[in-house]
Length: 56
View 1 (tube, rainbow, N blue to C red):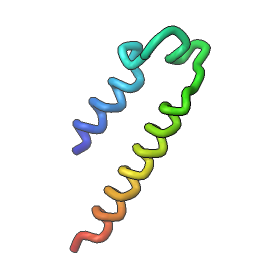
View 2 (view 1 turned 30 degrees about the vertical axis):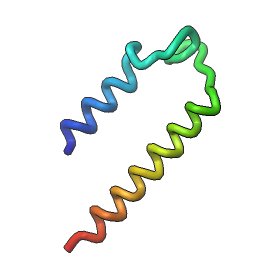
View 3 (view 1 turned 180 degrees about the vertical axis):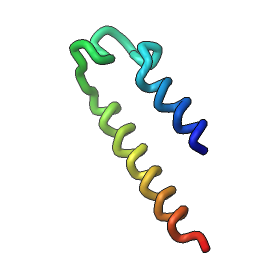
View 4 (view 1 turned 60 degrees about the vertical axis):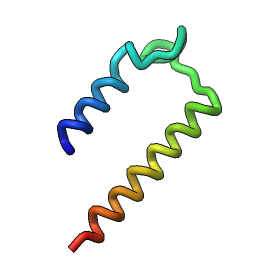
């Protein structure tokens, strides 16, 4: 699990994750779909955390 998270974090932090000019660390900007994806990722992470903590 930690390896998967490390790979995802590396991919998202890399320049390859840039969709077009302006995405990335220099001069970032947001689109509505970017915010939807961020909220979706937070929701999935929250659901996973609730499942993980509820295991016995």
